[in-house]
Image (cartoon, rainbow, N blue to C red):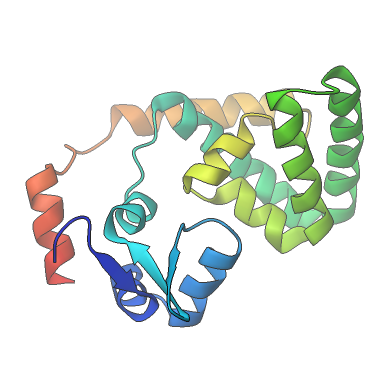
Length: 178
């Protein structure tokens, strides 16, 4: 299949090794871009591959690791973590009453209003929308300083032990076989 080809939700589900319903859910939450062809959703192969193997930079990966740790605390104590995030969000909205940062803060407000599952997705997803959303995270202070240092140390260690990255040709070959 050509790299720019449009996939059905069923084809995308096969490549993601998930259900078609999960792909539709990703589309509806804005984590997987799609277009409508008639009554059906179509997904660009490049968007799906970005979801499978996002090209995150070092800072984005570091933020992902930190937010995954926050997700663990959210699961353990959702009420207090969400309350602290809402308080931080209110404070940040006062500091940024307009502009680009405010747009992302408004998006956080929508995510927080949707509940724990939506917040967990935003905290742990590698999708571009979630990566951009985490740049204005209202979860400052959710991790103690020792917890934060431990996550950063583990992240640094994981970067030292990384295996060689897969070449683009090899990745395309693997994706075609799936």
